[in-house]
Image (cartoon, rainbow, N blue to C red):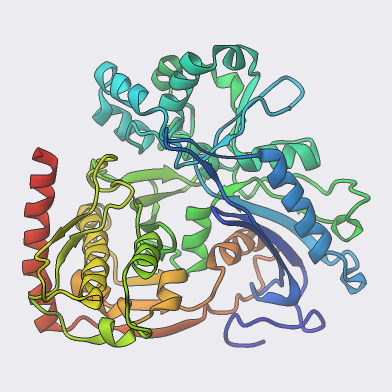
Length: 493
């Protein structure tokens, strides 16, 4: 067996195989993994997509389009006749906090509302006036926010009352896909938790929030752990799946932690994609739960504590498309910090953790005629790192055992030099998880924990570990203090 999770050939794959699906913000992906967690070469497929957005806060995607994408992925990765019936399970993760109204026969009455749909902002304000948000967060692990179901359902009742009256159930995107393919929604515990309606301690839906949203518990699927897959189904279109169990749909955040090797409370995952997050897996609920963070129940035993960051890869992409940057940015990121670097609060699309100020926008301070594009880019990167640090500060009291930060995602793979900046700002070592598609790998690993618990897993593929440099840590401590001052002024303004 190899010592890393590099791709392997089908002939060398260890049974049982798992087909893992990952429905993200920009694509539907799928691939076959062997029992050690390694991807099988050539049995991967990707179908790009994009959310439909509008100035009023709309952010949706057609759920039937995604069903067709999943079908295309299944066609592509199961067509090799050498597979036989070696695939022992099919598992799926999706972007979290999606919402679809369905009728009594499971037809979609609405597009899929994504986590980024903000049309329920007024309902958030109303619910904060009616409910004790601190008490809600202590029960459910979530704040009142447009990403969660209670405000969205309140808004839909006002904006589309006929649809709400006709709705028999409220499903996530993954539940809808499974219902169309299998006839069963199969909602994983983490999927239900990301609705913002699930009590993180009891695993039951919260009565106060259901009443505030005007819905009943019978309109939601019961949460299922990965230990409770559905048996194989008769699907003539995909004979390679004849012996496969079908697992409840989980969220990408949960899968990302597992795929990055963050399996317990000693490893903090820094997700660095279009958006980002800091997350740590705990045994049981976080206590205390800081008000700036969330704590999702992910199965009967564990919860995920952390906070989300809107603009990570999005901030990098904005800089690359807007500024006249040097062809190679590695030297810009590897240079020592400077007082001449602009101080940037990188809130291009608002802030989530830890302040949850959705209307916040970017601030650029200390810009002069001597400031060039590269210096501004460096300021943006430092601002992103300091945003992670603000979440890390909130997280520490509830997860003091953290020894390592594992960074995974597109930004870290494309610009690994930025991880030295992150280590210096956090004052902690940061290990680069180089494996692409860590989220998909995590989904496969969770299924394999059920199907092949005794098969050794291939270790995660990692690159350098970036150690914090004391003089740079001291520099950034001062920068972080000024960042906090500007942030407080932004709120007062």
